[in-house]
Length: 450
Image (cartoon, rainbow, N blue to C red):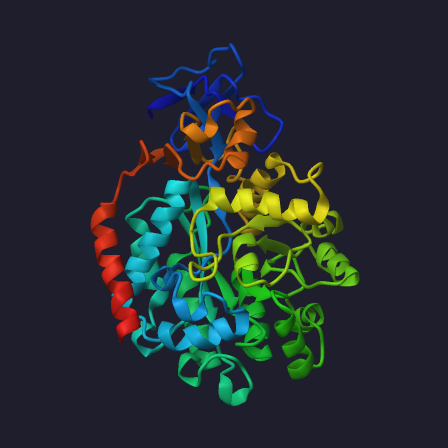
């Protein structure tokens, strides 16, 4: 196996206390040695990559997204809408998605994430109209071309308008179809090795779009097949009121009633919890994916990140769907998380390093990959994001790590996944982006014209 020494970086954020200022030694897709400042590797190497102008982070990890929504960004009818009207207006558009459109939307979302420094991305896909019954299979194929890791969650909607839910009736599925496809996908695609490129999780969409039965049965299946559970929860006050009216309980009580209050679960948003609920979530080690851009765009509220962390929950970051977060840029999401959380907790405690930990170590833990992703450490996978600070926005900066967020880094110079280059000199290695964007723009027009 060839061994590469990524030598003498400008700065390294390891997401731990290890010293890698002299560089990182990589072989067979793994980090095999961290080199201290002014030291040489103790292991032999075949190749040297000069990183003297680069700031190196663990590959960023996106723990909540809706890839298909890249086709409906900045759509005028919903630009100023809060969550429930936003959804009601968009559901009929999304229900027209076909496999080719989903393939293009997935590749655009993943390309944008990769270019921002993301090496592992979770998607929450819950739309399975008749023409898109094999949506997750489409996403698997779309992701293979780019070379980054994916957590594809088999979402579902089973509570339509006729039964008091939010989605149109023609967008929901019956429980038997959902569970059979979930089991099929896990057996076919879910990988369990340290270097796994594809993971599958189960993800009933939200309290206002699925029945309690599908929540319970999904939890049982996840436990039986040892995969993770994901859903939206406590995103808005409308959702809280829906749970009170439909189920007679608040969101966390509902979560417990369907068997989801455990460490297998990670939630998107997690905004509207009271103090008791925060303690219960922490004690159960339920994880929370913070999505600041989306929460601000839809005026949903601010996730109580530090309260949840102090209670025992893990916090990760997600860009959310590209029709509410609108961009799929994870380094900018980390910047927004830092600034939004400073409004709630103060500048002294919400540091650039904390926000970057949420985007790396925290998200890795949410997705069950904390033993080999999300840090720069010996034995971890060689997933790295590298940034240059030579743009005008960085001129005069002194702390390279802080500069990434404070000065608004938005594009990685190089990205490595599993020891392989997937972005070089700000260009995708494995995909013709210009050709993809031509097809994607046309698909977006076709979807809205249908």
